[in-house]
Image 1: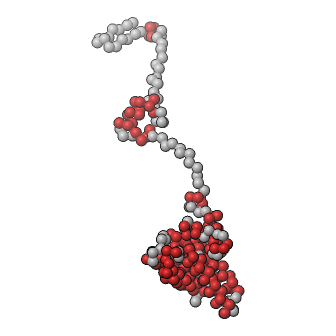
Image 2 (image 1 turned 135 degrees about the horizontal axis):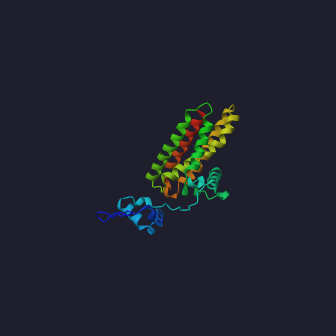
Image 3 (image 1 turned 30 degrees about the vertical axis):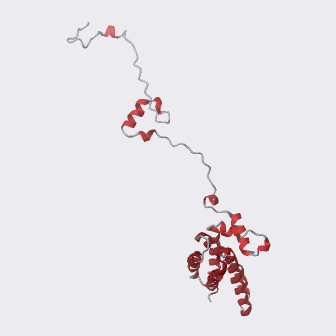
Length: 237
């Protein structure tokens, strides 16, 4: 039985005729590509960009940079620091060391290590002097820097800070000797003066150049007093 629709929009068929009908419904091929090749799907990318979500289509590319070692990241060169330590311990020009590298190529970690080492050996019975040693190193170097600039020297604060810090090494060398000869007062005084002169000479020979001319004693004397004060923080005198 077949019924005719009233408005021409619908058609009803009998069950016998419906059995012969067959077919498939294919789904539309829809692809959403949010990767770097989003240009292949312009509709999705255009839709996101119009709505202000274009940043979703951006893909961060791997730069492929090599991870640097920690020492290189912190600008620490152990070979350079070791060479500077030898330049300070052996300040005589006849030994052939290029001692100007301590001044011309300043660094922070080497002097800091020397100051911390001096602070560690000064802890013996006098823990309170550790912070003072670091403070005197920073502000004492600042005073030497200001005096050098006033006297016409061509040095930077970083150079003065490095030289003063490295030149504490002679005081570290004489520290074990003072522990063994503490009972011999005269010999102990001689060792102390030798250490102070050694440290002051190492620093002054690098900081006091020919540009000071006749004004050299005006800068050498404060450097000498600074290392006397450093030694007094260690000995407690």
